[in-house]
Amino acid sequence: MRHPIALSVVLLFAVGCRQPVQVATSGCLQTNSAIQVSPSADHTAAAVTATPLPGQSHFCQGKIALIDVDGLLLNRNMTGFNSMGENPVALFHEKIEAAAADPDVRAVVLRINSPGGGVTASDIMRRDLEDFKTRKRVPVVAFLMDVGAGGAYYLATAADAIVAQPTTITGGIGVILNLYNLQDTMAQFNVVGVPIKVGENIDLGSPVKAMTPKSRALLQHVADEFFTRFRQAVVASRPLAAPPPPEIFDGRIFAAGEAMTLKLVDSIGYLDDAVTLARGLAHVDHRAGLVMFRRANDRTLSPYDITPNIPLQHALMPISLPGLDRSQLPTFLYLWQPDPLLEKTGGN
Image (cartoon, rainbow, N blue to C red; front, side, top):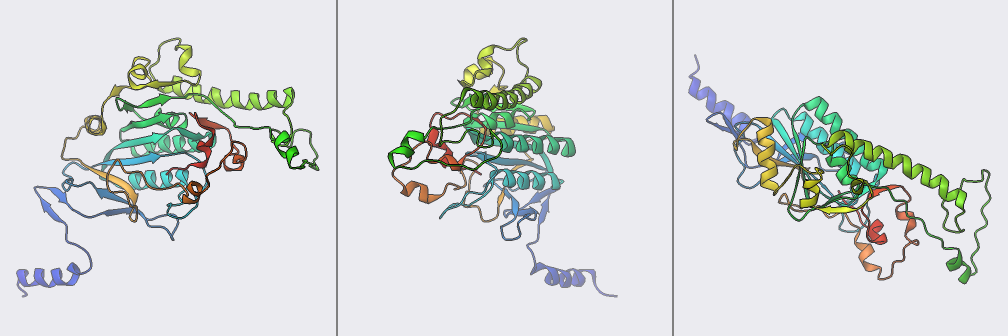
């Protein structure tokens, strides 16, 4: 009969070279490397992985998943040298699915730093988060950093709790569609639009002609419908006063203190406070380690890093005029947009 120790040694050499051995100490999973959770839907891209933060090596009570949402939320790929070129909507879906597939995830901290984005993009992401909560049944805490406004706040309202940093800008509950009249500008270059069309309103909002009152009314009707959807989501998700103060829904932004007074957020704190809250809601303690769900080739190394996703060539163009960049963002937006040129940026 073979000696059990000798057999163990043989097995160790047989499998030890193929993958690192995970050491269990007092019932805790100990690891210092990235843990792949779900393969990427795009086989040409690196997979989304659960990467432990520095100092987070023990997971006696599971994991707290950190999922970051940054920049302008649009359902399109970003392009350009030195950018990740990611579609923010698709990447968010991959991260959520990776967290859902990991049986050790006990709670999620949704780290948001975004002024919002497209109505449809924001709505898809919020729906994905709601679906995740229904399937996974773990608490989700939204943490707002510099900005969590417009569609980013719309996304945050699907969480179980919202924590704002003391200097967070939030709110921006409204809808905007950026349109410009370039008719006179084009005339200076002897350019005249001559569309061939069937359907009086098929070029509704075209910049090559002045907008008529009827055209404005039609577009306003669409914006009103999207705004109603936003308002209903906030009223249903947040413990607002009855009736809620009208200033909440006029598109203005709020500092963290006023947002808390209006009950747009639940508390004010920092990322570690949001993580502590998530642990409390999940009934786990500090032994539930914090992991980031990001691509294995993501160059960010801390929970505050933002993945580069803005095309570099935009910075090489010194002149940019509102309206001439209109093709970058032909959509209704849930977006706090103090600068019309914000449409040239992107996020992840």
